[in-house]
Image (tube, rainbow over all chains, first blue to last red):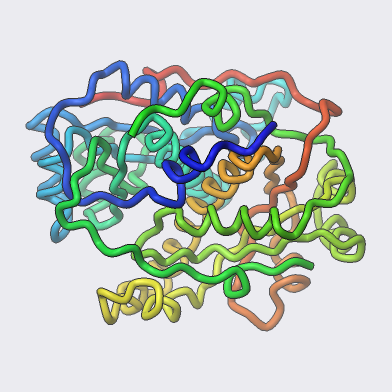
Length: 195
Length: 195
């Protein structure tokens, strides 16, 4: 495979920015489904794909989510055409007979409650990374947020399940309103080494 | 922004596969640095970028990592030109004065040990997702693995620091040796909803 061209790398990584202001036009449902159909292919441990996605798009659902969010996040949720709750399903081992058919009994690898919770949290976060980059690959902007009442969101959006919220992310077409200057990054030598 | 073209989406998501066999030619250091220079731009909470990357490329380091890995992972580590240990630095709050300069005191948001650990684990996993897709964007194949002795790897590669291993991933140019058939994925209705 070849390296993607510079405009694609800029769109995904080097020029992409976390947006705080949004155009309000709705996103078509077909685009949300196209987004999921990219995200689902990202690799996870034992193909467990424990992330669950709630696309919050209606005025009522936006208001319920905004009321559970901190600081400046509420107004962003109300303005963006969609904000996605990325959760993780602690019952994911039950899906492994379908998702990892060549290893019968794979669900027993996650029998320990701590292994199950860490597996769900790690792999749903990985899938959160795929989600952010898949949205950018489709030409969308993203604004991820962790400032919200997790227990409140779980009760409001995941009642009667073992799904827990991980983080939330607005998607749509961003404006420059409230855009931060690009923050510094760690140099290679601060974050990496070759041994 | 426009949607990336179909070959790019295939390279990143729909046709990419987790590789188990590798061509053994070394990867140039410039490519490893180019990879980091994409990954570092992925968004994280408070721009905290807690992931740390050890590129294991020398025969000695590969042997040390392989000896701490489970089952079939050891031979893959010995064959691949590089396997990367993706860790998370529990001391990441100390970097926030540099990384998030518009919010002095941001490091106090992570003062609670549980908040710090979950923040480091969540955001380093997110960065793991960016890492996997950035490698694919550069034309590399990836084989991520979680089957290894985390405490042993921490002692061997992160001694004297507060960095903990999250997962490992071989990178290089894959072969079809040991390639699994593509496993099923959850349908939209099984993993997502629009409210």
